[in-house]
Image 1 (cartoon, rainbow, N blue to C red):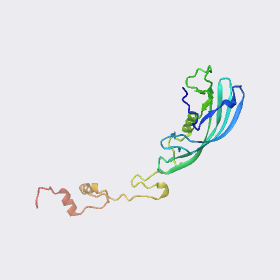
Image 2 (tube, one colour):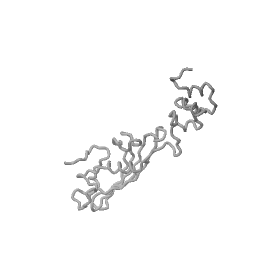
Image 3 (cartoon, helix red, strand yellow):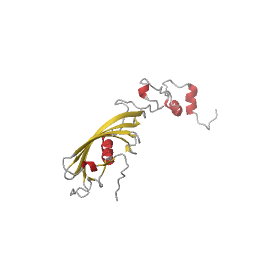
Image 4 (tube, rainbow, N blue to C red):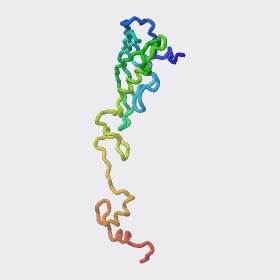
Length: 199
């Protein structure tokens, strides 16, 4: 039973090519992108157009498919979460063995009758060409770790360190608070007075 859907956008019927070694067909196609073409952070949106320039050549073992695919990418920068939109072109080549071919490689692509499925080959080519950690620009500074503002939009962004109120009580014990000024006599007395002693 065939596992290839003849109506799928990346499935081609190669009957017109024939089996005579050396026979060729050149095609230019525009097809809809399948679901899940890419990674979690960058990929080809489902339904967007894939432009294909393709050459099919009959060889002794099967059909050699080679060509270039142009796709639209969408995702987000891993540093600042800014949206990324760009184009990508990938080249591919794959031998599709005839069902009755003597090719012994179990992982080799095979024709199913007269149907050739390009989706796995294009999927592999696109995913391998994607950056592991996509960024909106090579020197993207990311987000402020304190407030989350995008640093590329505000290169002079800073925060006044000030005094963390959680450490204010310890400042008096140390003899100098975090702002750098000497504590008052009342602050010193308050830091050393035992809570159970009344004056």
